[in-house]
Image 1 (cartoon, rainbow, N blue to C red):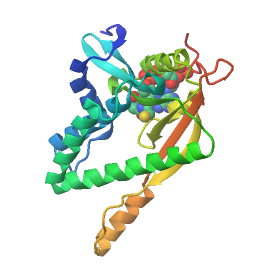
Image 2 (cartoon, helix red, strand yellow):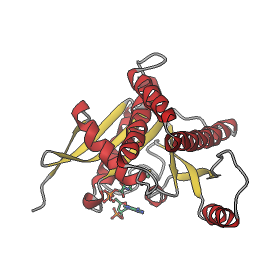
Image 3 (cartoon, protein in one colour):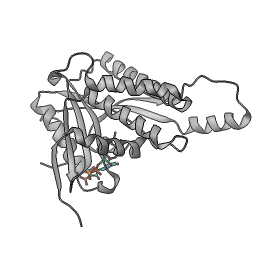
Image 4 (cartoon, rainbow, N blue to C red):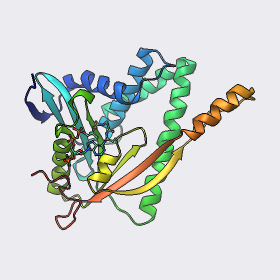
Amino acid sequence: MNEAITYRTLRREDYPAITRMLCDAWHTDPTMDHDLEMKLAEIDLEHCLGRATAAQVAVSGDEVVGVVLGRIDSHETRNGLNDHHVRNMRLLASLLTSSRGRKALLRMKHYEDTNLRMIAEAKKDGHAYQGELVLLLVRPDMRGRGIGAHLFEWMTDRFRQADVERYFLFTDSACDYSFYDKAGLTRRAESIVLDNEPHTPKGDAEVHAEHDDIDDHLHAFVYDNETSPSNEGVNPLGRD
Ligand SMILES: CC(C)(COP(=O)(O)OP(=O)(O)OC[C@H]1O[C@@H](n2cnc3c(N)ncnc32)[C@H](O)[C@@H]1OP(=O)(O)O)[C@@H](O)C(=O)NCCC(=O)NCCS
C-alpha cells in the first residue's frame, strides 16, 4: 500500500535514517566494512549539517524517505565552529587509526579541494552566491513520485523568500545530476577527481587496474541558478 507523503522540518531523530540513505547512495564500497561505510556517511551528514541553515524531510508512515538541506548565508547564526563541525572533526580523526580510513580521508580531502577550487574559480569569474543547495536525496524505492521536485522547490522557495538571487550546488557523476539539467540549472564548472594517494612502484596488474580506474574517473560539477521570478529556471519542474 502506498502511504501518503508528508513534509516537515528536520529533527535530530531523523539523523540515523538519513545516514543510512547517504550510506546506500554514496558510501557502499566492497573494500570496506559496513562500520566504515556508515562512518563515512555520518561524516558526510555532519559536513552537510555544518553548513546548512534550512532543512526539510519527506516522511512516509513514520519513516524519513527524502531530505533537502540548504544554506542561506544571511541566515547563518552560528559563529565559527559549530557542533556539527566539531563532531565531524572527531569522526575524521577516528579515520586515522586504520589504513582504509586514512585512504578514505585522503580521497575526501582531494574531493573537497576539487570542489573548493571550482567554486573559487566561479567566484573569481564574477559569480556571486548567497545560497547553496547542500543535499537533495530521496530513498531509491520512493523515487519517481515527485518527492525530489517537492523538496527542491521547497528549498528554492526559501531562497526566494530570503532574497537569495543566486545559489550553487556541488554534485558529481556518481549522482543523478541530470535532475539539475532538467530543472534548468547551469553547469558552471567541471573537474575530474583523480585519486591522489601517495604512489609506490606498482606491478603490471596494478598499473592496469589504475588505468581502468582513471578511465572511469569521477567528474565533479558546480551547478548554479538564479531565483529571480523573471528567470525561466524558477519552478522549472512546473509544480506550484
Ligand atoms: C535526483 C532525485 C533527488 C530525484 O528525486 P525523485 O523523487 O525521484 O524526483 P521526482 O519524482 O520529483 O522527479 C521530478 C522530475 O525530475 C525528473 N528526474 C528525476 N530524477 C531524474 C534524473 N535522475 N535525471 C533526470 N531527471 C530526473 C523526473 O523525470 C521528474 O520530471 P517530470 O516532472 O517532468 O516528470 C533522486 O533520484 C535521488 O535521490 N537521487 C540520488 C541522490 C542524488 O543524486 N541527488 C541529486 C544530486 S546530488
